[in-house]
Amino acid sequence: MGLSKLALDTAEKLRPVLLKIVPQSVLSSVKESIVRRNTDRLKNANIIPYDRTYREGINLIGNIRAETGLGQSTRLIADILEASGEEYVLHDFFVPPGPSMNDHTHDDKITDELPYDINIFHINASEFTLAFMNMGQNVWDHRYNIAYWLWELEEFPEEWLGCIDLVDEIWTPADFITNTLKKYTDKPVMTLPYCVEAPVSEEFDRAYFGLPDDKFLFLMMFASGSIMERKNPDSVFEAYKRAFGTDNDNVGIVVKINEYSDEDITYVRKALSGYRNVYILSDTLTKVQVNSLIKAVDVFVSLHRAEGFGLVLAEAMLNGTPTIATNWSANTEFACSEAACMVGYKMIEIEKDIPPYKKGYHWADADVDEAAGFMERLYSDRDFYDSIAENGARYVRESLNMERSTKIVKERVENIRRKLC
Picture 1 (cartoon, rainbow, N blue to C red):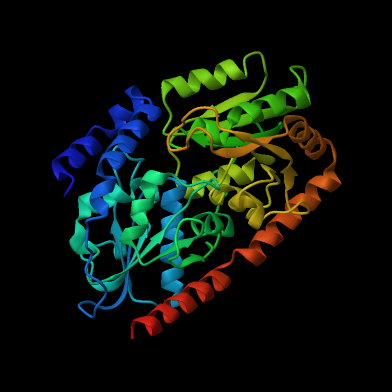
Picture 2: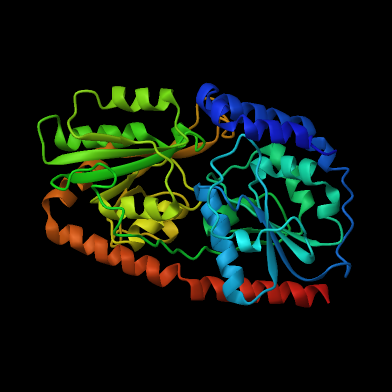
């Protein structure tokens, strides 16, 4: 049942090469194929139920070192556990070829040992089968198993439903995901939101990133691993074009690409051909550098078709950078029209398979003209700009703080303990 560690190790060594020469869509299809072929095995797992084999505490298992949104999300859960006073350890897990693994802020807690009786797997359903194959059933046996999942749509892939059999309950960071998953299981599905912290450093200013001080800059970000169609950069580019045309030399657009390929760079350059002040950033950045970049620009833009949480949106708002975002999916739980520029949309059907999103599923298509209007207004109306900046920071600070998140997690763990007695 174990997925060959030799294969995983080889894939990790080849990661930089693979990500450059193999399209992310191909890598995603390979993963999907492995999951699909092994889904039936999950039904025969026969996991040994919880008993008192292990001492009380939490094993948090996830991509703890990854310089990605999912990696940052895992670290936030670790911070919440630390603040809650729970005994816990971290176990780093990823499926190569994964992202850069250079965040070492939590290394003091990372171990190969799993000494505790509760597992929290911060591993999405898309890779849960692979995690089970790789780590082995013994990691699940005798423990209370919790999956912490993110997902972006109101439909859930059938081939992942078997993963629900591997856990006792599911946590998510947003009611949007919780409500989706409740349609597919009678097991407990709980919303336990992230706390949002976004430290910055004055060292990483515009000059550090090669950006001009005299331009009003819009920033959008995407990663090859976060399905281009979902992040929807085309609509951001089109909104920018409609707002400012080719003649306004006082504005600019910054495009940050994570785990980029040469194809990504070519795509952006072609999309914005003929436009001034286009800045493409592709270096791998630390989390503090990313936060500082967001704070250094004037506006953050995300015309996503769907978000499972939208962590970077919350971080931008917390740091006082006005945000333009699609008014659909999980990000609406920490943003409103007073705190962000929420763009209207129409729901559209996905016309072809875009793994892991299936033909016939639905997501949002943001109103490009409305987004362009917000761009123009933030550029020209300082009072409006300041209002959105101030309200956004306050809204996130009040709704996604450590105290609230810690209280929710602590209460849930206490309830689980009472149930297990």
